Image 1 (cartoon, helix red, strand yellow):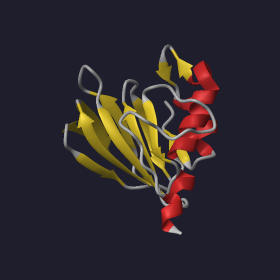
Image 2 (cartoon, rainbow, N blue to C red):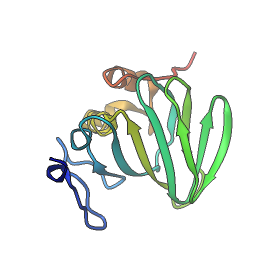
Image 3 (cartoon, helix red, strand yellow):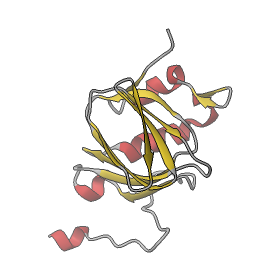
Image 4 (cartoon, helix red, strand yellow):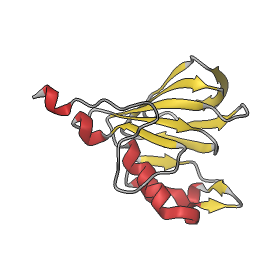
Amino acid sequence: MPEDRFILLEPGAARPGRIPLPPAFAVKARTDDTEGRFSLLEVTVAQDIPKHVHHRADECIYVLDGILEIEFDDRNHHAPKGTFALLPRGVPHALRSASDPPPRVLQISSPGGWELYVEDLIEAGPAVFTDGRLDPVKINPIAAKHHIGYQEPS
């Protein structure tokens, strides 16, 4: 019954997951909450997200606060508070902070699964970084399990 899936989160609350996530990630709807249709996270984009492609999922971003820079199909776009972007599967894109404090966004992945990838990435810890930045070469083995591929340096 639909009422069995009703979720009401108080302000600042998040859905629990397999592992605790850092404060930059608040899962509002998990993939299993939506029977796989989507996942919804509130994310503070404090770390630049290198160019990557989602092979299965469309990604939607709604900017709650700050300014997000979106590189999409080799063009840069500034997305201030109130901006919405649909990042369709199969098209390379990157996300960067263009404000201080960093932007805070709602991120929807359809079908779901984004929170599962984030959990795997957080669980990997510092092993996915080189010189304090996310390293596509180190991320790709984790990302591949979630149908995501990061562009590696030539």
